[in-house]
Length: 315
Image (cartoon, rainbow, N blue to C red):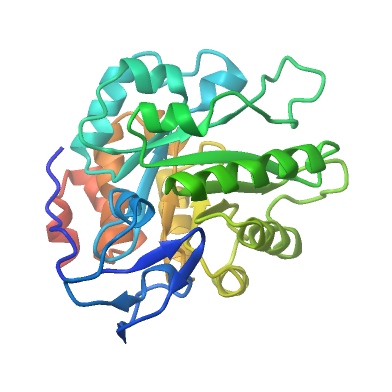
């Protein structure tokens, strides 16, 4: 992978858990949920492990393109994930920032200098309660594998919500002890949830993840810019949107991503719409162009149609 973004020279900050100690001159941050990266310090300030690891996932613009590839635990062998080395290479070539996988994949596949988020949650669709995600890996295993963050899946509104929240709170404490960022997948999902994209349930789920101590919150897009802007506004850590099922068209997927960034999202976590695409590398580049270069959905679509270089769409 060729990363063209340079290290964040002169930008230093101290993170203790999910709190940020303020010192020095505050810098304007490009997304609304960015208090964790807002301070500029002199070169003499020491950084923590957590902040260093976050910078392997987020670029200088404080945004990220994550490609999750954890689907085969819940769904079994998944189209697009048959050859993990190949697909990781494809999204690396497309200049994604990080991938999200389970421990077995992390142990056996070269990450190609991508940021590594180790997923700690799992359940299969064959179980009596597939919404109950249990812990299948540990924070210490993530550290042994060189992960830059861990992720935990919580189905808010499910019948085993309390069990998942209890386990999540313990993981957060351990992550804070070791300086490892935690991404919370906060999805409204359960018998009382009529629509998983409804503003009220999405905003509740996202705020819940922030309240418990997540460093990054991943949740569903609400379907329109204004309501999702309100979701982002109540969460003082980066919010990234989940891709969900494969979209009916590339334009639909790219428009959702473009709208979420306009609403203040700090990035995307898009899986099936990338690894099940006929050209995962070019689709990844289209996402990168929207998230990092400010391209519109139509400009990004041109990358897919014509193979336009990302820098051209942003000019």
